[in-house]
Length: 128
Image 1 (cartoon, rainbow, N blue to C red):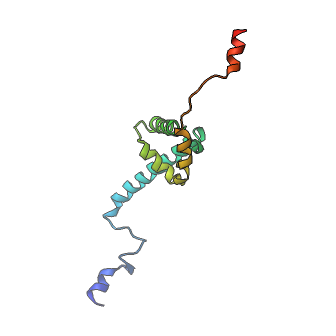
Image 2 (cartoon, helix red, strand yellow; image 1 turned 135 degrees about the vertical axis):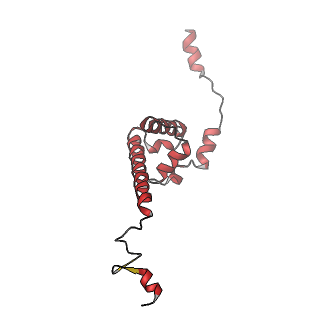
Image 3 (cartoon, rainbow, N blue to C red; image 1 turned 30 degrees about the horizontal axis):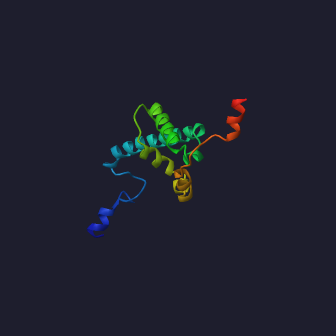
């Protein structure tokens, strides 16, 4: 057996075997497990928030109110502030948020201004 073969095999198992974790990775493994648990908690909380604040309302004129409500729900759940980008990133794990972006037709419709005036029949009823 040459030197490289000896390095790759210890106790009849390959050094790269998944059965043995390298000693240096044991501390990072616990950190990864904690990070994974916190990610699971984040995902569960955002899904709970969607029960109250439907994702469908992220489309249209209620978008900013719903997004703010989701941010507040997460803030209360974790006692730390969340940015709108963080909330949208969490939602993007489960949903295609590109589908919720407003169409050009919608923005044109919402930006149109019309002068409001009461119908003449209203004034006729008021005078009598």
